[in-house]
Structure formats: structure tokens, C-alpha cells
Amino acid sequence: MSNFPAEKKNWEVSGVPERLRDAVDKGGGYNTIVKRSGVSPSSLNEYLKGRVLRIDTAARLAFACGVSLQWLIFGTDDAESAVSGAANDDTSLIDYYDVAASAGFGMSCPDTPQPEKVSISRHFLRSELGLNPSGTIMLQVSGDSMEPTMRAGDKLIVDTERRQLLDGIHVMVASGTLLVKRLSAGMHGTVRIISDNDRYPTQEAEISRFRWGEPDGGDAITIIGRVAYRLQAMS
Image (cartoon, rainbow, N blue to C red; front, side, top):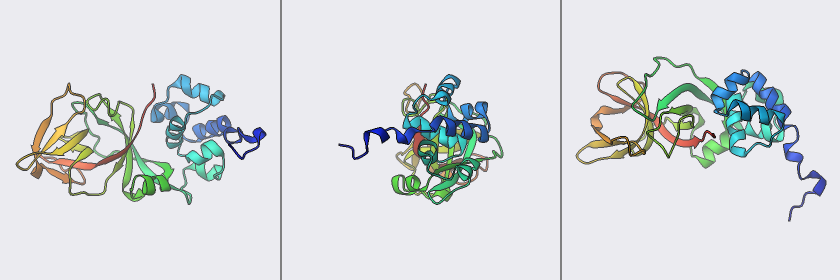
């Protein structure tokens, strides 16, 4: 049984529409937040009017606006520093690239994408995901080749720390295209490049073609990082 008095049981959602409105305004405006978050315009309008936010939707909106989830829901962070995107003791700023890693046949990768900064819980990154904030980035998914694991519009938290094993879902650049695919060690020094959607064929490449870091062209397949977490876009 709850220890909270009955008259206080709804205290935690008080002021959410006002804080969301402030965050949207200072985070780039209505159209920008719709694009970044994947929340539909009609749904965002409802949330601004007071519709109760699901926690996963609140997290996506907080990331898109550059505020902490704690401040958006509870109002307990310093509002001005939270909305400005400044990190506090409980949050880290990570790079968000407004480019799509294609879960399909591939799309052109911009030469020098300029990241924005988004605020995310340091505890969540370190304790829940085991990630170093300085080596963590975020980007989104395009295409359907990784369905049902991930869908177009999903946001990916990507660990860019170098690893020895090429197993799991990774973001990579191949032939000038930015891709997200599942990798699995094959036989005889090869790596299988797998689409979770069985309509797309599995490919295989020599392990010598894979490298970590900045794309350098040629025949190389450059690993940007391993996908550690997915923020699902709601329809």
C-alpha cells in the first residue's frame, strides 16, 4: 500500500504540459521537435494540452528537446539549465546526428554531419548500458530491412568504443552509405552482414575489410559503433 496521502498521489505529473511547452519552444520549435522525436504532430498537440505522457514517449521528447527526463516529468531539475541543454550532475550531453542509418539497401552518408547535443541520464548510460558517455552517440533508423527489431524513425544509442568482436547490431559505412545491420562471425575469416527482415538477403565480407573509426573510402567497411539501445518510434 502506498505511503503517500491520497491527495498527493498525482503530484508527480503536475506542470508537465507547461514544462513540455517551454522545452519545445527552447529546443527549436514545434516542427523541429516533431522531426527529432518521431512523435506525430497530432499527438504532440494532445500532450501540450495535458494528455498524460507514457514514459517512453516522455523520454523521446526529452531527448529531442535537450532536457532531462527527470525535469520534464517531475520538475525537480533546474529548469533553465535543463532547457538550455547544459549537463548537470545526473546527466551527460551526447552527440545526436540528424542522419539516418539505413536499414535497407543503403543511403548516401553526408561527408561531415554536424551533431547536436542531447541530454541523457549518466546513470542510465553507465549502470544500465555499461557505456562511457564520451564514446556514445545517437542517430536514427531509415528503411525496413531490420524489422521487426527496429523500424524507420527509431533512435539508436550507439557505443563507439572499439571492440574486438564483430557480433551484434552495428552502424557502419560501406561504399559511402550509412547502414545498420546485424554482424556475425562467419567461417574462414568472414563476417556475415544480416538483415533481420528475411526479405533482404544476408551478405558476407572478408573480415580484413572491417575497421573502426572514420570512413576512409575504398573497399573498407568502417564500423561506427555497436547499437546498445533503441528508442522506439510510436505510430
